[in-house]
Length: 149
Image (cartoon, rainbow, N blue to C red; front, side, top):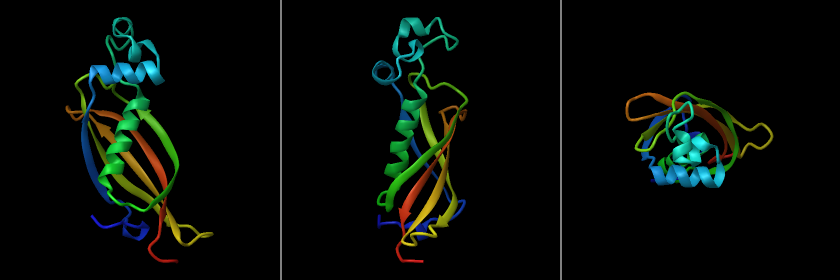
């Protein structure tokens, strides 16, 4: 795949990537290390929560989905991330769930102060193997331009 620049992106362009499957061990490890709420880090305690069992941290889910997005772009000329926008949670991710990212480029604009780069938004919807929306979130990227404005 050849390198893609800001000019190569199209407003509303969509792509799908994944799936990634979550396993019990990975959920417990991430939970214990980074998000130690009982429903992420202690299988027995998770049974007594509103989830009635172990669920993945939303941070783990977003991290795994970020990898899918990055890998799907090959050589996209990203200079930096500018932010993660509004993560909205809908359904928990449980051991054995496989999630897929449905993404869409939005709010593409060239930088006025530095015309060798552009800004791009990416809206992501994450769905599980049953087609249920797990979460939605967005990124903002700073991407190199092929040519100055």
